[in-house]
Image 1 (cartoon, helix red, strand yellow):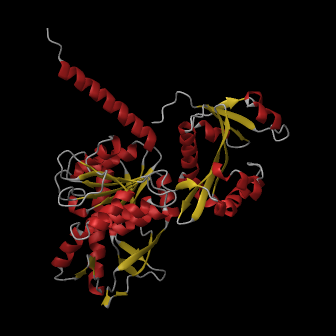
Image 2: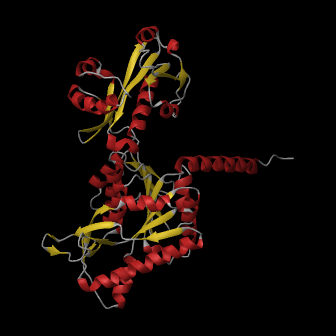
Image 3: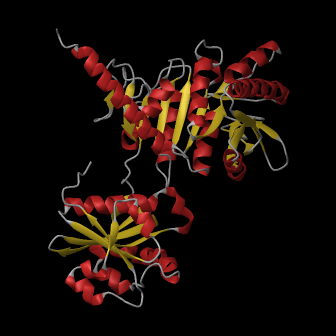
Length: 455
């Protein structure tokens, strides 16, 4: 009897897929995704399935924020009212007479979304959580009641997500006096990512992802096997795309790529931006739960903002360390101490501003130490410290260090997440055993690197 190889391997692939899905569930549970949905998808036959997939993401513990595009509904309501509005560079000029119809269109779209969420036993909630200002007059063009997003009331949105609601934002924002403005929904999604801690941003639209044909593609970018769309790019490659394809890349794609670069390339920014076609069944779940996906993925180099410290960075390093020293978490270091060992220090910097630091000290005979890990107080929740420690561990591997150690008084549990384990002061290299401060009584942690993969 012949062995049914295709069935056997198909079963194995299915099991691997299940394992991959569980891994992604663990990774994303408790994280926040922002989903910007084009309302042009609402009439599509597969739209109810897309909404079902969105509910499933919520059910597994992912916090969701929906941002609704309303252009299709607005066009319908304005046409019904016999109103015509001009578009300038893709931006609608909004006269006062159009505002009531635009608000009505937005309410219609949001109510449709809430109904779909309710059908899946999820609670969507709408509200005006956007502070806006007038776009004003640009190059002689008065945009009237068209506005620009100023800020998102993130505290309210956090509270609602904590109560298991799915907040829904739409295209109306208010200024301090309560005047309403018509806003761009893509810009709203961008601002949500700037004002909140967001893991992923999805632009889900009624068209395909970034095209792979007819454009000058950056070196190293990947195209789907069918050659129709770009599979993934990092933010440097996005810059290449924007610089080299100004005439051939349509304005909407230019805008989305620009927003993707902005929200990723900032301290604690979004990890991944996805541009996908919502008309394709299961495309959202493919992007979340598989390494292949079916849209365009944009990502940042997790170490792009980490560099070796210079002597000019010493004042900023001292400033970062001072708060930790005052709390007793770190020992005091002088400018001279840091100067003598500046080669060991690395910093996390954006536009010349230093947000975090850490040091990797080498002692020979396979020993290394991680120390002086500090992050700006306002950015502690942005993953900067984690990125620095991962970077230093990777550097230690590259330097063939076999055993990393560190001394800590308060952060042992955090370092356990990187694989460090308890050790005893007596296990330290001889030079450090002699210098161990019994009065400080720091906990000693070890991480064995020999034989550990760099992947």
